[in-house]
Image 1 (cartoon, rainbow, N blue to C red):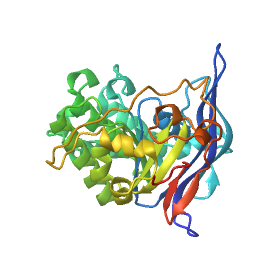
Image 2 (image 1 turned 45 degrees about the horizontal axis):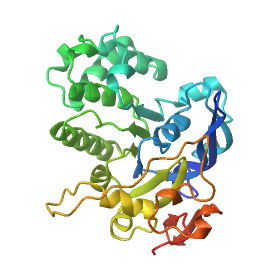
Image 3 (image 1 turned 180 degrees about the vertical axis):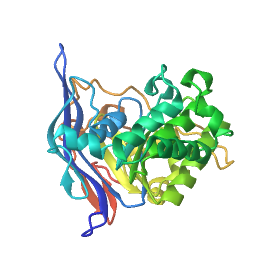
Length: 325
């Protein structure tokens, strides 16, 4: 851990670009994020906001031809972007792991799940194969799979979506990482299974004192799970604060619009609203603030200038000319 400030992960001014036949897509634009040791952080926004791209950039798993064009990603004070590929591979899974959005495509369909987990153990730990088998069985039991000795010999296609996600969590946690990037881990699951997976992640996070970066579009999920939230729009951060402040005192119009369009889980009824328009084309971005064409509080200035990401109150950051308006 970085003993100076307790920061496990720090992303600063990160830029990710994707060259295409139509032009260059700026998938991430001057993105800042930090995460403390043992902290659960939520990353929310509509589809196309850049959430998964940020998670993949942290993991060094950007899809070709995407590349980091600027900024930094620091882990315990050391740059991940400057690490040789061999050192980065040793770090990933052992210190930082990822739970992917779609477990059926993330798991190898041709290998038994036990063998896939054993492979991850032997890659990062100096243990015998028999010890790796023992660890695998214990982990399958820890994520709630009954008769783990039987599940050890099964293939991914033999499981339901919720059980495959449990296997993915086991695979991510087998080397006891300090940070887990969970990319939409409950998207394809029904409400009951979603709750089970979240409770499982929360229990394991507390038992292992690890940090979780939860990527989701579901504000109800982050309300239950995270102590801080980052809100993204069109590749940029637009707001960040403690979860309580985001829900009770949102500053950015986009954050307010997301909250008004979310289904309430507290039993209170209210009319749902929609956000007009769609996410802008990242190749042909509007001038000024990217959200201004959809914003009900836009002013003339919003179409000319891009607002600066700044700390409005202690711990509460936003990028807007009409903060709190």
